[in-house]
View 1 (tube, rainbow, N blue to C red):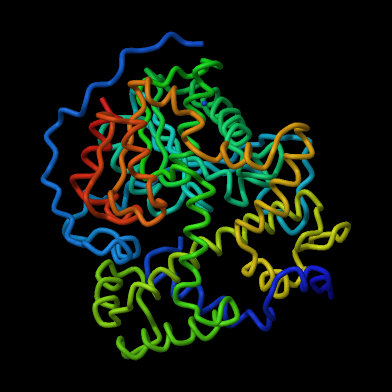
View 2 (view 1 turned 180 degrees about the vertical axis):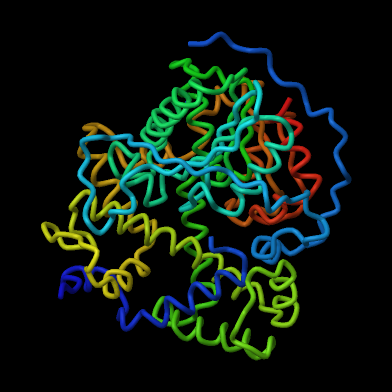
Length: 455
C-alpha cells in the first residue's frame, strides 16, 4: 500500500502520526463551532437600498465569538427548510482525465434556485474551500430567491470540485486566472439557463474569498461584456489575499503552544470538554441552539477560538493543496507518477496536508509556477496581484460595485479596513461588529443584501 514519500515527510516539520481518530475529533470541533464548513454598455449605477431595513442589533461584541457562533436563531432572517436549490452538473473540460480517486468530481457542481417567470440572475461565489451547498450559500440563495431573483450558486475556485473540473490550470489563487475560469463557467451556465428561463439582467456577489473573486470577475466583464453586471456586492472580502492568509495562519497557532504537533491534544481536550458539559457524546449538531449553549458552557478563550477558526481554514487548504497536487502530478504531497485510486490509503497524505499552510502553497507551488510561466514577473508582483488594491482606480470609480463588511472582521490585517473605506467610500456598508461572516444571517444584514441585489 502506498505511503507518503520520505522527501515529503521531511519537507514539513512535525511528526504526522496517526490521523484517523484526529479526523473524527476535527470534524466534531468544527461542527460545534459552526465552521464546517460571467462590452455591454455601462448601466445606470444602483441606488442605495431604499427598502426598509430592520435595526441592526447583532448582540455579539467579541469578533472571535461572532465568527464561530453566527447569528442567534431569534435574530435570523426567515428560513424555509422546504426551499432548497437544485443541484446541477456541468462538463467544463470534456477531454480532461479525472483520476479514479476523484471519480465523484467528474463534473463541476453548481446549484440554482429559479423564479417561474422573468427575473434578474444573481451569481453567488462561495468563500474559501466552500462549495455551492455551504451554509452561507444556502442562506443567500433563500434570501435572494424570496426577494424575486434567479440565483446560481458557484463553488469557490479553491474547492476541490472546481480545481478538478473547472480550473484551467488546476492551480487556484491567481486573481486573473480564477476570474477567467469563473467567467467561463458562468457563461456555460447562462447558456443553459436561457433555453428555458427569461433573464432580465445580471448581478454578482460573493462572500469572503468569493467576494475577492467577484471583484475580479466584474472587472473582467468590463472588457468581455457577456453579462454587463449592473450591481455587484462584495461581502466581507479580504483586501489582500496574501495578508489575510498570513493572519489566518497566525490564528491556528494561537492556541497551540507546541505548534502543529499539539493539534491532537488540542482536539482531544476540546471534545472532552464538550462531552463533559453536555453529558453525552451523541451531539445534536442540527439543533440551532446547540452551538450557543455549548459555547456558553465551555467559555473558550479567544486564543482557542482563533485556533479553531484557523483550523477550519487549514482543512480547506489541505483539500486545495492535495487536489491541485494530484491533478498536476507535482509530487509535493502525493508522489508524482503514482495513480490516485479509490482504494489509495489517505492517512499519511492527510497528515502531511494538514501541516501544509497556504503560505507553503504560495511559496512552493504557486509562485514557482507563475514565475516560470511569466518571465520578468517578480514575487513582489505576485503579492501585489493578490490585493483588491490592484483594481484600485477601477473600484474607486465604479458606482455599481459596493462593499459590505464588519469593522472587526478577523481576517483583515491592520490598515486593511481603512484602505477598503478609501476604495469604496460611500459605496460601503460597514457594520460595527460581526467578526468574519458572523452576522450574515442577521435580519438587517440579509435585508440590506437582498434590497441591493434584488428588484
